[in-house]
Length: 548
Image 1: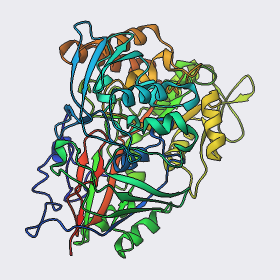
Image 2 (image 1 turned 180 degrees about the vertical axis):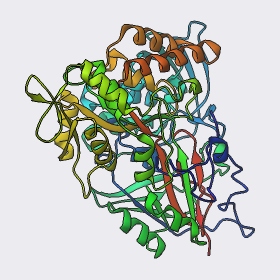
Image 3 (image 1 turned 60 degrees about the vertical axis):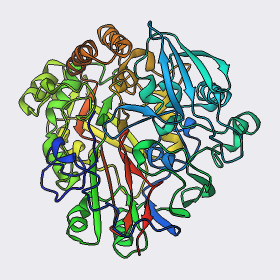
């Protein structure tokens, strides 16, 4: 996996949220960037003010799957493992680990001297309690539970040694433990007051939650006794800033203007329409990195009409000019995508590129073959007197999901009526888990190619556990490839299996890939010492400080 650290000199390419001219161009030296420490050295104290586009609605890492947790989690939580600057597994709360020859038993040797902010020590029992909390049905975990699904049991060997037993070899396990969604909660809080974790999680990270006002703000204060940050931070000891104040600013234009005016020091989800202006501003730094995992995909519900017919799925994909869509919504800052695996992901197979392509003639031919040969008064295709309609629910907001609006216009050209339904988040979640939709758009970023198992293996269709197979895809050949891939150790066999799985997905067409999943943010140059968590990638503020 590659180091994703970079600061773009300019937005030039025409492709998902910001134009990184190439993956190679994203790599660079942290020390050489504009955020390198000044000769005067770090300044202690002060408040870092940040605007974000949305908040997760809950801060218990195990109970959410929201994108913002990648950023917010690094403020509050520590993880058992981490990824270093090159994307390799490295120690964090675990100093080392042993893996049994059959790949089913992990023995973790834990770091000593770590405490949660309520004074509870980090030890083998704490790790065990957290694993049980993730898979407890009462947690209703949409993500962490899936990531540790092979976990069967654990045994405390001594205070700082935990033996974890898996149902089968599971190479992604260490990668998943490095993600913010699997951050460690206080075992005391889990056991005594689990109902408080959403609003007042207690962790062992560099900052402590001070206040949380839903949909408004989150405030953290630093832990003065924090000394156990990962080595890639290049900063040991407590954070430099005293406080981090986060404000939810949903409107992109307001996030941009308030950053430029100095109301905030940094903004998450920097608006792509303002990328050029940000880069032209000598006081600001613009970051635009591609996340590993799933790109932005409009998934088809393959379990019901009209997308249970593979000819309709293929026609839909062929009907959409994804280059034009990506250029329009990304303002030249996004990369177009034609695969179900993001380009920076380990074992991404470049030979899949170009296999899914814009071909309106093919789209029309496939729809004819599927029997959608009629036309109604508005030009939409019909069969047996019924219009070819697909419903795509999305969260209501100040504006409709731009990808859906653009795709709607593209498929109309071949006679498909894509109807966008804006729903309150709670209702959308209910529909999502009930499988009550025809198409569902979104991203899924992670640090392992096992995202393909999470998103497309039939065992991940929602049943007893909330699954993430939004396409309701069930294919024995793909299932076998993905199971063998996650069990294979890193190396040639894993690369071969993941390549075969990517090609099989392109044959099955479970969705329309549109653009890469970009992580974009911007900040003032007086903010120094920001590092990048290569798991997603997002900024980390443990070593950040404010100059002057």
